[in-house]
Image: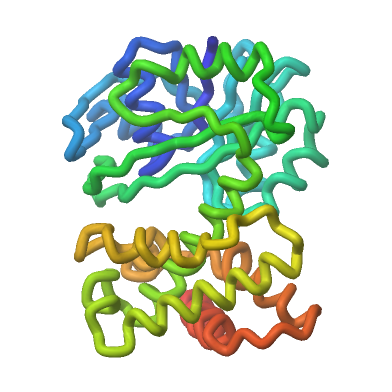
Amino acid sequence: MRILVVGAGAVGGYFGGRLLEKGEDVTFLVRETRQKQLQENGLQIESVHGNLNLTPKTIQSVDEAEPFDVIILSTKQYHLEGALQSIEPYVTENTMIYPLLNGFVHLEVLKNRFNPQNVIGGLCFIESTLDAEGRIIQTSPRHLAVFGELSGEKTERILQLEQVLSGTKTNFQLSDNIIRDMWHKYMFITGLSGITTLMRSPIGPIREEANGQKLISNFYKEIGSVMRALEAPIADDIEEQHLHTINSVPYDMKSSMQRDMEKGIQVEADQLQGYLYKIAQEKGIGTPLLEVIYSNLKVYEAQWK
């Protein structure tokens, strides 16, 4: 399969790099400055799972190229429109678009922009960032990317994709219920990013503070109440599962949104916390913690602008 990775940042660059390391046919669609950086220094990954320095194939959106079998999207939501314009020339009726974005808004955008059959479900868990020199720094044991047909079917194409993604030095996992898994991930990252950005702290000190456990638990309960009002297919005990996960991750773990705030760059407030807050307001659901957390992010965004 010919694989196109949109961008070569902290997420796409990492998973694309692991596929390239395995020997798969991977091309990165990047901006001119990133292309020059990759040509001069290579795709550099510093990871707890092993370092890499590879010379990747790259194209820009203005370049001509044959269509791709798989397109991996890992851009932020606020860059999605530009990314979709850039991939249009490379999409055919048989192309699988594999998004690794947070939330759900992007699924409808993709299905409206392309044939719905082009779109599969996806999510990832990884703690990584791009440093000033363009190196991808990956610091946590978990480096998981999940995929699956939105219908849950084990189609011929999804099984073929599973073969291609297997055998890498990261964890690609085929899901039986990707929609459920995406809702669970959405809840987890909304809670983690909301709490860490509110407190401006890694998760460790927050969970050890006298009221930390209560704060985290109550916030997940608020998120769960909104998701259940939407009839999202989430597990009955998913809040408890996420609290257990929060208590088991490394002490110094930060959310990607928190790292973005520390860099002084844009965050996905409206796509994560904002989407749920809007639904809560429409349905009359009380979410005082979500309101405070979303307001905190909007104040930050106002300063950023």
